[in-house]
Image (cartoon, rainbow, N blue to C red; front, side, top):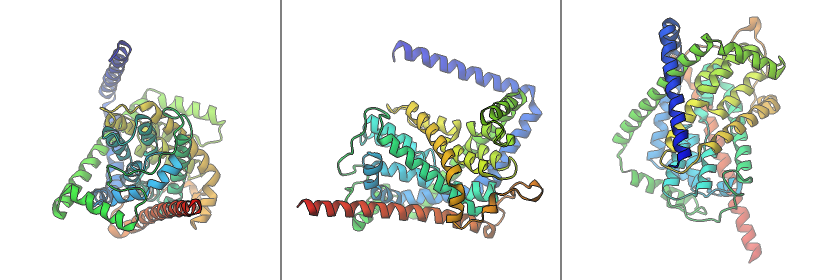
Length: 426
């Protein structure tokens, strides 16, 4: 570590220590408000996030243990090379992110870099690309839980994936993370043990090899999956409580009012001012931000655009987790930050441009985002019975199915095109 890096590390440590002391002082000064904010964060986590995500966190661990995610990564290899100019092994990181949500993609990208499968520049691009929100969160938590509209889950998923695709293509064709990335030639994927041109039989062998390498029987795998899912959700709940308290303290010292003034000045009063609080929450924690935006007044196109931008940004809480996961590697945080800003901006613009067409495409009534009589806000009722949760899970399954079919179709089309081209050359 050189002198400049050491000075930067000391400055960062001092700022973080000052922020911690300030937060503790504010909690002592406003104990009642801090306690209420803590309960509010806990309620959002317990009523919406925990019951909606626990089954799918468990299933994600099972899919990983049985090798399904590895096979999906191998299946995505042709698309990774064509669209994003990344090695086929990067498909595993993208598949992990889409199956389990962020920041699992960051962990996969860091693992690939540690194993030497990707270069530093490729790792930076892969880290920026593999920040996908699980469709489970968008359909079960945001659409069904926060907005009370399960049918809006698929349009939100479409906006998120389309904006991620746009940003990923731009990353692969610009000097992001270094020189312009050349398209890598097909090569075996060391971490998956399969070549990109593999067919269904080889994909089945990928699953078998991954499960054999995992080595856990079904009973132990299921127990580990439950333990891992609960532990992950407990960490998430703790972060939500901490940031809920932080946001309340910032509001008490006038930061919320300042943001609302800036919001009106920048957007010339076109956006509802009640969404300013949600924008502040979203800057720190994605779940609290999405909840505040969904309950920030009558739903509108602004609500959809801000929710899409919030999901693309991810929140400083996720950013901190990503930075910790890439520790010990030479992957850089700055490209990841730029990609998140770009993702948020592209998602915001696409939501405004495509929201009504997407509602018609997915058969959702356009009045779903119209002002309700009396200015009613979305339902805030928690998921209390399995029967009431079925629409949420059905929408999530549809989103996963659409993604898998699209990946299969794209990979098949690329393989067919290559065979036709090679036959013409011969």
